[in-house]
Length: 120
Image: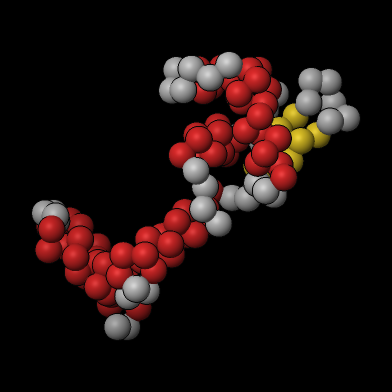
């Protein structure tokens, strides 16, 4: 599942609490996106159809909540990146990052410990 940038913004708000009202979501997004109430409602309705959000209409005001965890979305995004950029090779992706970016000694130690724990 690939979230759009707008969907990520909405989901970040939803992941911060169990349920939100539309007003709370609009307010949380105001500083980042400056979207009006109708824009946010349109995203939420579309995201409900995609199975990302639940809308509890029996409450007034309606309550909105994430149906999918942040961790699941992050995992899906990582898998998309690995498959798109390195044809599924995690090792090649990590090697490319390490060649192109500086790594601190602390990060190097964490990576080494992780590899040892994985018995690679």
